Length: 91
Image 1 (cartoon, helix red, strand yellow):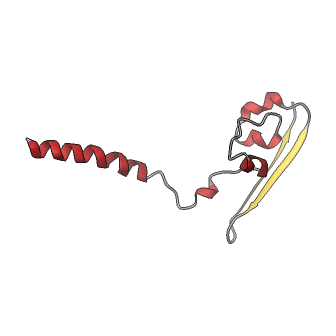
Image 2 (cartoon, one colour):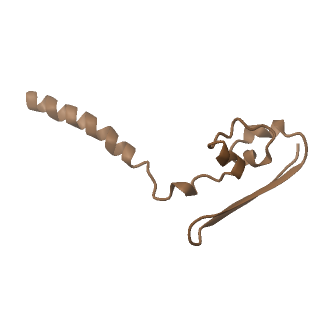
Image 3 (cartoon, one colour):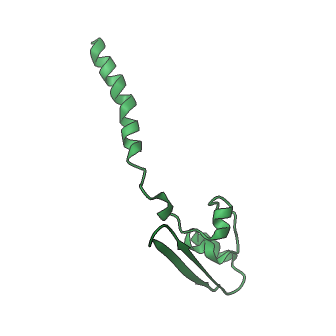
């Protein structure tokens, strides 16, 4: 009975650690497509109304746009990994 409890406790402690370990990626920088302004704010995109580049990550910004805007970002990562996007917003 005591051995069963020990095994149960160990299994309940180890299982969440194993499940959480699967979340990590080798290249975490490839997940975020951020502009320089978003990166400067630490990825806090909710705090930026009226920003055309924020529409990529937060579509709720569309009603805050006051005029037509064009924006784009190009990121050159290591070696030949490149990423970029362009946006045109019109209310």
